[in-house]
Length: 151
Image (cartoon, rainbow, N blue to C red; front, side, top):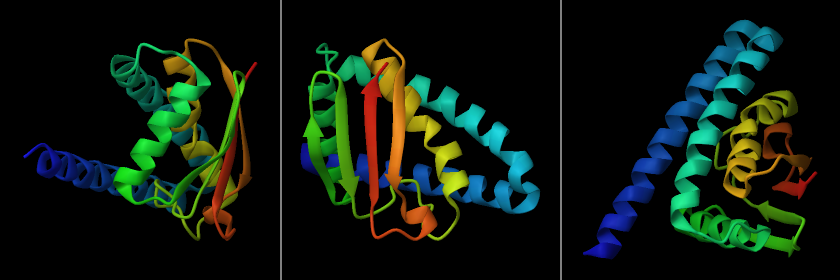
């Protein structure tokens, strides 16, 4: 029963992420670059809320914990997530699918929407982090590749 519930929960999460993605893409198509600060702000707040939920999932506030949660979530959602490297100060991951549904859009939209992940990792760790998007499916790259590092 737990497996069925977990699968249903992951399906619901995919639906929510798809809806959020569709709204962001439509807003960006309608308003262009003027929409980016609004999108970034909304994603930042959503990331803070998500980071608080992550804190409830693990008392260990380390990059290793972030990597474990990222890998588990990516596996459950079929994102093709791979942790390239993790240390006390950084986590480098790549995945074959964009969890935020931004394939074929633009790097600038990816950067605005990815504020959700930057802020959720910052909130989970309780410290500000930098995010470096090396590759993005949004801009046509073959995969997404991101590094989070503590400041």
